[in-house]
Every structure is written in structure tokens, then in C-alpha cells.
Image 1 (cartoon, rainbow, N blue to C red):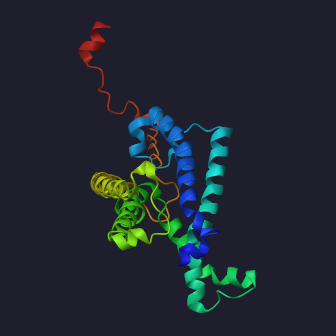
Image 2 (image 1 turned 135 degrees about the vertical axis):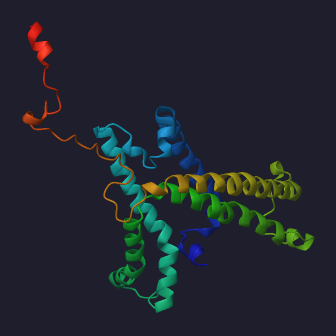
Length: 245
């Protein structure tokens, strides 16, 4: 309910979700392909691809844009959580924006603190995406649609009928079953296995409150020997050697 409350027009969610998915794919796929093409297996040990890019104004601009994106996404993603918290403490109907902003701090500060403690976002994102997002975004909605409209009366009383180009109800059920099976095997199965292997592989690079996440270790400097010790182990010339010279 809070998720729908956080939406501007919930009835347009399907179209917005599709457009947002297409937008994200067109935004992320070209850059992801280019970075993987350039750096390959180096990304296995460097979850933050910006650390591999050469220092330039373009890289700095990309980092700034990514930070802006993170701030905006954080606000959108936490809005339902804000509403739950405001209703729990009885501040949801408050008209003062300043008071509502203050009461949201107990939600923001723990998340912000955890983000500072655990900066290794790559492996965690992969694990969460494969183990949790696979269910919440694909499997559970598809199964909910199947069980909701499994009876003929429910299909007849549906607010919207499936379009003809997908095969009406039969085609819709086939698509939902395919999504459930495919995501369960590929997303949850193979994706979960790969993300956990990657998580274990990178666990030695993790650190709480780390100053530089997954940065290469500093090269130890060699000790400088005093001049009088450089030839300390050289043997003295033999008398026979001195006789011939």
C-alpha cells in the first residue's frame, strides 16, 4: 500500500515500468559492454569500474553524475519506507515539511552509516539481485498473476483483458510460467551461485570503514643500505692474486 501511495499515478505503473526498464537498458548496456570489453577479468577484483578508468575530466564528470543518480535513487527507493515510519509514529498527516524531514532522519542515518561501513557495493548488489530481486521483481509477481486469475470467474471480471498479440489468457499464462522457470534457474540458480562465489572470492578485500576500497596494495620500499655496508661481505683478495698483479 505504501508503494502505491508513493507513486504519482499508480494506474500508469505498467507503462512507466516498461519505459524505465528500456531507459535503464539503453543507458547501462552500452557502457557496460564497453568497460567489459576494455578491462575484462580485471573487473572481477574491482567492483567499482571508475577506479580502472584513467584520470580525466570525463571520468570525474561520470563520477559526479553517478553520485547525483545515487542521491535521486535513494530518495525514490526510500519513500515507501518513509511513509511506513511516519505512519508508525503518527506524523504522516503532518503538514509541515520540515517536521516530516526531521522525523525521517532515524531512517536515513542508519542506512547512511551502513553505507559507510560496508562500501563493497558490487558483490552485495550481485547477491541481493540474484537471490532477492529475482523473486520480488519476476517470480512472485508472475506467480501472483497466475493464482489470481486461475479461475474463469476471475478472468471474466478482470479490469483489463490481456491483449490479443500475446495470446489472450493462454499466452499470458505461458509467458508467466516461462518467466518463473527461466528466472528461477538462470537468475536465482546460476546468478546466485556466481554471486556467492564472487562474494567469497572478494571477501579478503573487504574492510570496515575502509579508506580505499579494493585499491592495489602499496609497493613496499626497499631499505637503503649505508655505503660502508655495500661491500661488507666481499672477500679479501688472496696473496696469490696480489703476487700476479
